[in-house]
Image (cartoon, rainbow, N blue to C red; front, side, top):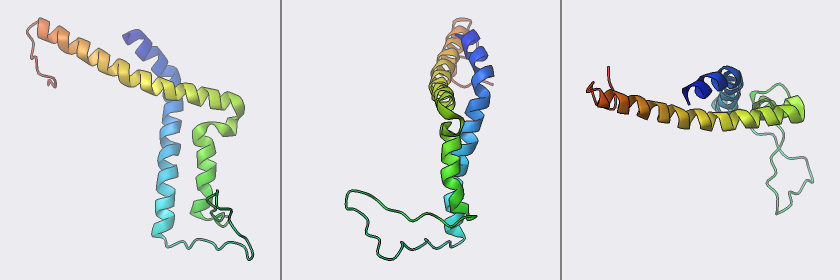
Length: 125
């Protein structure tokens, strides 16, 4: 398990870092826009939003809010076409694998330390 954990992390680490950065930015930028007091643009005159939809006006060009859509496409891999979506989806599954295999490896190390009589605490120095 440790070998798979290490080798897959070499490949998917770059994509996971990309996903983490673009995901964090897509959450932080709307907060910055709200803190700057960016007023929401008004709907065009005469526009009526259908009851089955949630209509939001498009942010003005160059504003902080206009970057959120771009960041979403970068975050999901849509900007890189179908291959990007597939790779970023696999990176998401890899994140789950790394979490589970990391826990498994830690428990194995803990059991090994306990069997040898070395500091059986869950967190050791």
